[in-house]
Image 1 (tube, helix red, strand yellow):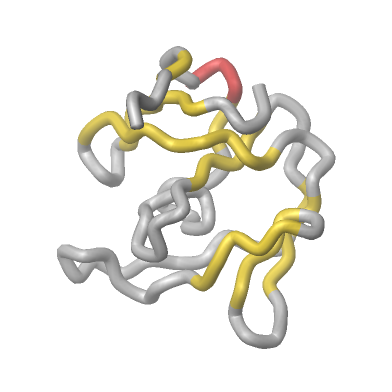
Image 2 (cartoon, rainbow, N blue to C red; image 1 turned 30 degrees about the vertical axis):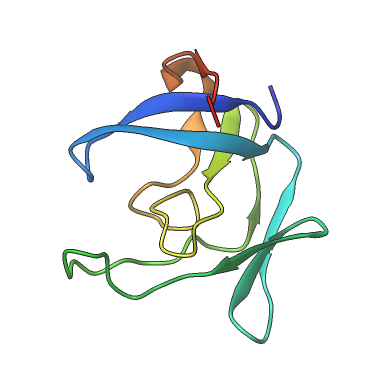
Amino acid sequence: KLHDYTVVHSSWYGKKIIKKIIGQPGDFLQWDEQGELWINDFKIGAAHKKSSDHRALRPIITQVIPNHYVFLWSPHPRSFDSRYRECGLIKQSELGGWVIPLW
């Protein structure tokens, strides 16, 4: 559910990633003039053009999150998450379970 942490396998990243669910069906994704991504009234942050291993990254397109999909995120500015098409929106059926942070 919204604001829970989950795990999902990323074929682009090559392993499982743990992220927070912050977008759900019906939420609106939009880029502002400063290059910051927003989900409704929550600022996600900017997208980078390259990953830490120098592979190209493409920002997700402006859209409404469709049924059965979620937006995954991490607050770290260099996080690989749903703000990039290479991660994208994740089908709810692909979520690998819930994660409880220990911090």
